Image 1 (tube, rainbow, N blue to C red):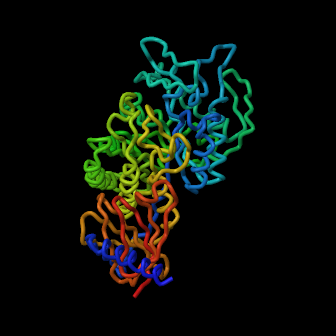
Image 2 (image 1 turned 120 degrees about the vertical axis):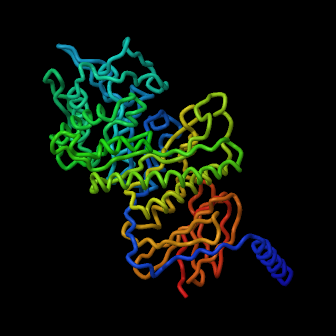
Length: 493
């Protein structure tokens, strides 16, 4: 027993000496700051239609279980164009005697998505319009296999005869299929679905400036027609506009947020935009610091967006509903066969946590990680789950850590840090004190928080990987490994 006790003492001594060699970083929250801001930022994700989410895929069930277990709300569903047989309900134009509505594949994914959401709020974006509605040089073909990717489906920059009503009525019928139990088609025939889902939020198209190369003026006409058509079915629906790829093209906000550019009484409840950071290398860990420098630039751009919003339409919410990292060559079949280094998932998760803190202080309404499932040749680096098993990776675990520990209504407390490599943000819930700590570097640090005598640390790092956050108790200081993210529940002095 004495030998065992001695060995234990030696191990503790070794660990303490090893920990002592790390840099000591002090986080100093201004707990008594006047007029603290209230945390109102929804921490969430998006689910994009692809074969992993189709029944029969080996990772299908576990992927939706990961979504369910995350308890995320206001999750964005996107029916994206590379899989038209899953994302489009009317692939062929109607004739005088026949229509071609077919929800078979779409239903499977929507039903499983809504089941995983268990009644929590959603943002639905069936972003892909039927291709026959667009002017093209020749008819656009697409694969018979619904699971075969088709990057060429979205074509055309102008609707046939500028028929905005045609697009609006398509989306009105899709909305009615899922919320009203069915719809009347173009020839007056009833189609019954038996679906009565609640779709509280509806987003109109996706990255219009890229997917169909539309001007903001043309997109706004589509938006107005779609919104007013769906509002006839369900007036309480909240509408999200733009879903910009070019988030820093500020002229889009100047035009779209100006109510005089819209049809009278057209609601603009939120605008959305996207952000992806891309380092120079897929595997060189030293290049991953670029995730944070690019994030800092993005924060500056968001500040300008906020200024435009506040000047033109201050009640409109700001949703960043796609946020993540796209590694270089992500869809190159010659590259994506190479494994992504494990540390990447932690670095990308740390970037999300860092931006969550920064943007929450600025009052951004929603931060949606992209995306539930990706896989080789389909943006594998944006995946929140292992595409082979459907189980969470570190990115999703970081999101869960934030979602479970920072509550809407908490008071945000700015914090200074003695190191540029460690970010901190305090928050108050009644008389309880918490601190978000993000390690922006791939170096271990010892962290101490002023005004506390220790506490409990819940963290995700390169040792936890895809497992749930680990918790430990600490006195005076705790160790945070490279690209680790921690929520600290403080014990006050």
